Length: 178
Image (cartoon, rainbow, N blue to C red; front, side):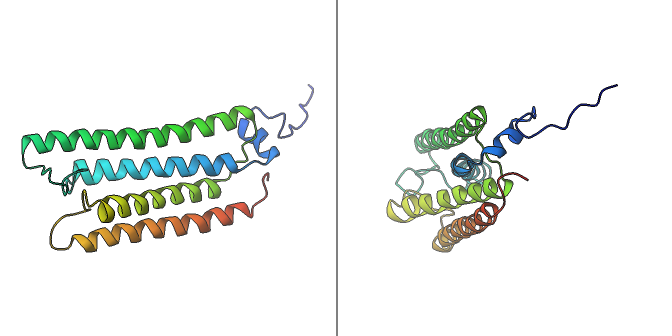
């Protein structure tokens, strides 16, 4: 019986083993940020808009969700919002897929996780500033403490982005192949 010679990363059937040998992490970061943008948007839309029903896209813009017409318009706006978050998520998948096909994806869970948190935090900060403060089309939770909820949302986003940056930096210090 003949023993098989040990496989090198480039001989491995696992595409991540082959990819790690080449060392490109830009696609990991790009995919992670896009997934983070999409996932955070989905969380906002599903949890805050649909499950808790704290707000819809246009509830503070004169289209109350207490009328059929207002609810229809808000549901349409929520749907368009979900199309955008779906596009972010799908784009992240495409970036990751193409990098795997090229064989130049240097995988790092820390880099990917950090980029995911950066994307999620960025989504929260940008969406919070634009929709809650500049346009005022909705608030996290309308009512007597809406500013506190809105500022809390911004703080959460900033915290996620900072933690993501720290995790990404820690992952970049690791060798591309172990």
